[in-house]
Length: 345
Image 1 (cartoon, rainbow, N blue to C red):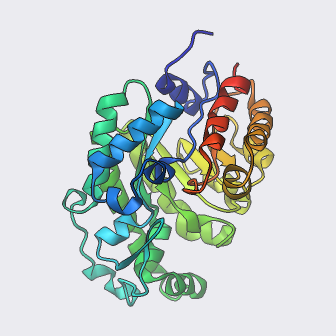
Image 2 (image 1 turned 45 degrees about the vertical axis):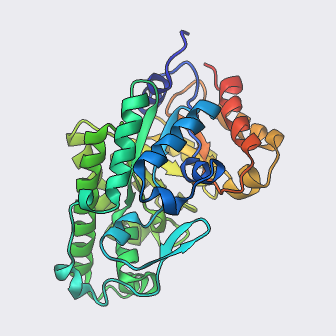
């Protein structure tokens, strides 16, 4: 088969058409910031610097796509949430933005271009201009509705709201507003040149909530966002951390194009459920393999996954989640080389 560009290869995998080989897109976007002498904190306010680093990392490693995100609380921060800065990025402060669900009506939703989210839009525009005809550009619209609601409400209070279900109408109102804002931001990323928009909804995991909670409070908003993105002739990816087996079938049926899944989820179970329905991206273990393992261990973990999915399409080799800044560069070379060596059709 004739060699494809990274963009052609990735799009064929996303649409369940056989590429020349399995694409490889490790979630190295934050890792690269530290590996190339910058930080999440610097780049969240400098989209041009972010793009410069991702371009250099792509030249050095040759992966098939680039994620655009500096942290996982960018939207909440832009809405006014207090954050603290650590060695590896921003984390929520102790003071929630919403003291009660009733305050959702008073929440201000600014134009993303007037917040630091504009730096992600800038980075997307630069990367699309430089590589958009060659490489898959994945613009993160940051937190999905359920996780964003938790950031705004405060984790403990939000999970208590969910457990007690005393104000379901207000909960859905908050989730709808969060989803609407995600779509606004996604539209701007698509306009800037992203081929895929992606949300991270880590709290939608079976490691945190039940399948019933997913069905009642998360699925409707994932589905609504996926349908809205499809109406734009665009592509949505949903990232969920932890073990998603309890809600796997529901996630597959959201209408999203890609499901980014983590190492606690059984690969074979996910593949059997998703095959032909949604493209999977993942799920090589970040901690035990990509960070503390050897290149040989990375290769072994990649090889059996690649052999499992062929000759079908619909899979992108990746880490299960964002890579730690401590991950050795040799292991990133190993995951890319494994796709080239064992992912050929």
